[in-house]
Image 1 (cartoon, helix red, strand yellow):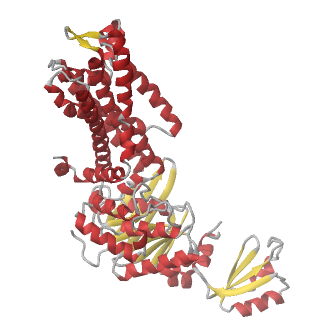
Image 2 (image 1 turned 60 degrees about the vertical axis):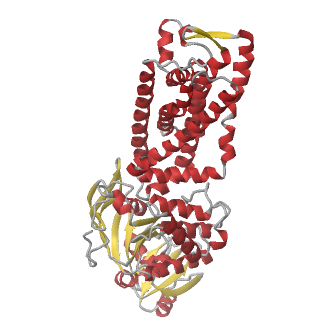
Image 3 (image 1 turned 90 degrees about the vertical axis):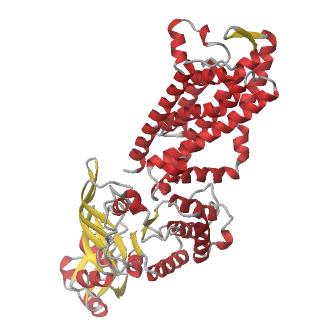
Length: 312
Length: 257
């Protein structure tokens, strides 16, 4: 297969998807490189899942170019799907099978030899700490275990690319960290990983590079650090006004830092030095109920680029 | 044979085998319904009316009804799986979403499901054939060919059921299915000869796929080979092909948006 090691695993140009009148993905460009941990960050409805479905070969594009492992997913779907492991946002484990059987049956869909599948299944169960639940039904498993099993299942055929759609949504913090560790291990093993998330911390922790999506378009691309340096200032001062921020005088806010965003009960101020900015805020007569200084995050990048916070 | 042409369809078939290995009782229950009809109608009502004219002879009523029940048990086996189970996997369990993320195509998927539903029909038919042998209701060695003949019945009803299921929106819509299936079972020359129907009504009944299936099985069980059996086979196969192609198109429409 013509895929020299420096060619991108996934290459999209003017990639567009319409559902009737609605434009779900509007002319986006991106490359995913071999071995990269690549993220799509954005709020619900930004077009992340639709993009993932097009890459996974289960949603034909409306227009534009899309190349996966050197092929067109609309024409070479089966060949490309054989190289991709998919973890859906919604649980799609087979409830009528046991934990181990979920892996065995899935391996057969990839046309693998039964003996090879059995060995691989046991390895994966071990890797994802599910060995002692191998004979159990899927339903009583915890959310974190189900998600780990979904990932194990996606890895049964040792895919070149692993795709995860919102992998930690609905998980408790401990389960999230377990999953993050597992994904980091996979990346070190050379798997190219593509994930979508609306969690800033997840994108920052995991992604080598990411694109920020909003309303069907890509609004920024880069490493988390690059994006923060480029689109946010070094530190952020947050001032809390439980009574609302509408009545705060613009003149007082303008002088505090490099820029500010007025949210319902908070003012977010981008600045070089948060402590100094706080002093300026008090000097200009503002009386916040509380305040904090932190380093800029992707959350601030998103806010800066779209004028909205991610959870709105 | 199919394994060589469509290995991925076989993997879908295997999934169902694995599921039902632990649920074989679910399959066994489907065998009893035609048995009860044989006892209640075949022998019960048959005890009152004695014999019935068939192909120029008077035959015991139970022997007349039994082949029709064999045909309808194949229909039930195939249609149960391709409707209820398919709907569950399609709409609720999201099993098909997972399967289609692998190299398996919608065509492989539908074929694998239909192979399984067909096997279920064949199992019921085989079990019922054993019952007929035990009760001495088989009048020709050609009856041994019925398990092959029911593959056509299973193909027609499995594919038609699958195709219809892709249009159902909720479990409530299954009421429509029963509105079709119950009269199909009762009126498809199951309990009396099709010649009883007057005029145009007879030709409507002749077009029922179960009438064709029953004619096929009844002919074999009485060793009455006739040209119309070829029409039966062709008609059932045609329904199978049309149903399969429609089901594949609908699956693509629903799952590969």
